[in-house]
Image 1 (cartoon, rainbow, N blue to C red):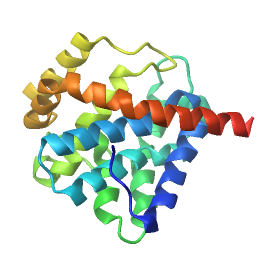
Image 2 (cartoon, rainbow, N blue to C red; image 1 turned 90 degrees about the vertical axis):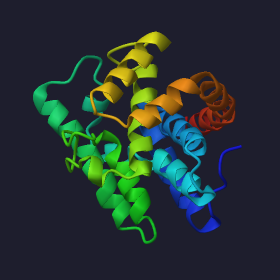
Image 3 (cartoon, rainbow, N blue to C red; image 1 turned 135 degrees about the horizontal axis):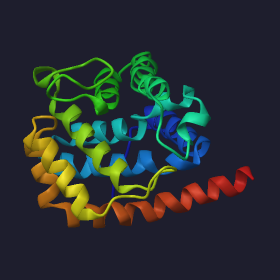
Image 4 (cartoon, rainbow, N blue to C red; image 1 turned 120 degrees about the vertical axis):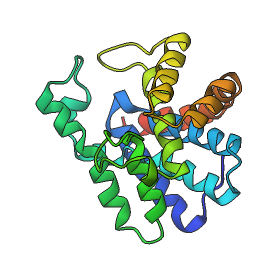
Length: 215
């Protein structure tokens, strides 16, 4: 079972995550999938229990900034233009800005917002480099890539397993993502996917129930 979030923050965190999943159909369950992957990688990396909880929370909230991105861009059934991509990239900054205003979430805000940062300093929004990327941030970046390429999107279908492995390995070999984290994921990919699918059954039931109530 995934980590139990502390009562003080639990309702707020789950409400924020649910708001994004319910607002944009193409992103439905993406938060949870990324959180589950990050949680599993946190365990494989032998993080302390409280750090595993924090990385799970960061996964739930990492795309929070997309709430301010126009729906026409998020749901566009084709590749984005240069201008549209520039707008899309702002979501990580908004994620950081919002979470940084909540007391006690500084580390979670960084982990969540750094999911598009790269070890070579060419990521966004802050262009952090390897020296500035903590283990939690590195796990988030790998988790988001894995989830994003595996999922169906309005402009493409999810990629097959072998293609996903190639993408991740190339990024590790190129110094873009942490090679140790990528190795952990690839070595345990079947176990991780199985665990995520089990947790997703419960999450999917909740999501579908919430959508039905709204309608």
